[in-house]
Image (cartoon, rainbow, N blue to C red; front, side, top):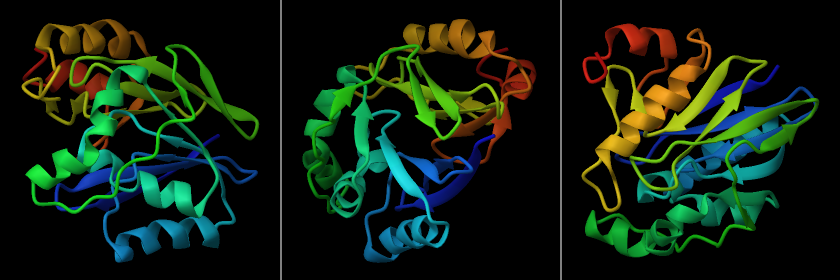
Amino acid sequence: MLKVKKFVFNYLQENTFVLYAENGDAAIVDPGCNSMAEEQLLQYFIDDNNLNPKYLVNTHGHFDHILGNAFVMSFYTPEFVAHQDDMFLLENLVESAHYYNVPAVASPKPDRFLLHGERLTLGDDFIEILHLPGHSPGSVGLYSPSSAFIVVGDVLFKGSIGRTDLPMGNYDTLMNSINNTLFALPHDTVVYPGHGPATSLGIEFKTNPFLI
């Protein structure tokens, strides 16, 4: 079973997650920290729980989700993985953040690119990568069958869906990702979105006004 720790970082109230196994293997997902205080919160949790950051994973490349990439890679030695189709966003982090008057340090380049269906091992468990384009072309979800959760970035929210009016967003593609990939999973799967509270696939299938 994998455990999930959530932090809420930066002025856009972005959700950063640490997924970790019993042996201490951890994946840091979407580090949005962009102040020393936020960086310390993340660092203290990792160090206090004797975690070993094995992976840094970006669900997508929008600036509020990757502001802490440089910090994580300078402080720890995880394998940095993201989807190739969002490289244009990672490369434009500083410019994108500047547009919103947010200071930023350029993101390192990923060590390798994620593939749909691959598994990232954490201890005796794993998370499966699901390609969920639409909000951005390289959006991915991190699915844990054993722990019945998925981290979806900004693809799906409680009562809402991801924006598609940002560069390379596409509404039809997003709806296909939700209807044909996410909703193919068990509906008791807990959904951890990139902003706001957790929900479940079943709740969103029945009540989300953008999907009814």
